[in-house]
Image 1 (tube, rainbow, N blue to C red):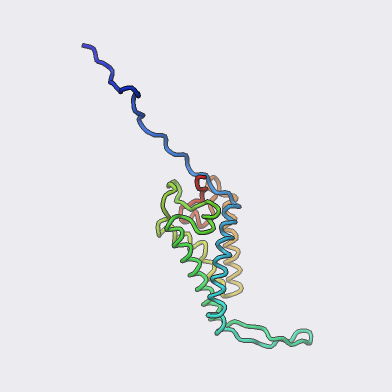
Image 2: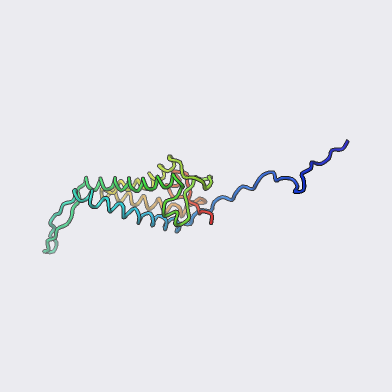
Length: 191
């Protein structure tokens, strides 16, 4: 008795498996920069509206300073006022980032630039998990907490600069330090 080949009908045999989708394309540095600038303008306005009258007002006095025979009044903010403003600024920036990226991996700036944050090796669906989001935010915005004191602010600023420049020599994933800590990458959305 001879075995007959299986009958697959008029359309032939069904495929064994589908081809996996291509990995997402990494976002270019300038796309990330423009997205961050958009977010910074939005948040900068919000932070200034909150911090200036509510926090800095009660903690600011004026002192008379004489320079080259001219006396002027200069506003001076107390240590406590600067500390509170640094903490409030950090909390506003962090809350904005957290709620945006855990929802769908995109801040407003990233939506406009059509890029998003995703975990390395993951797809483009959904937002980041809370732990990854908090790690990323801690490295990205943590240095703001040092903004209340001049020397510490300098250290935080240098760290922040190194953080964002890291993507230029990080190959192949072009990750900033906050991406490395959270195991994330920034990718382009499909067009």
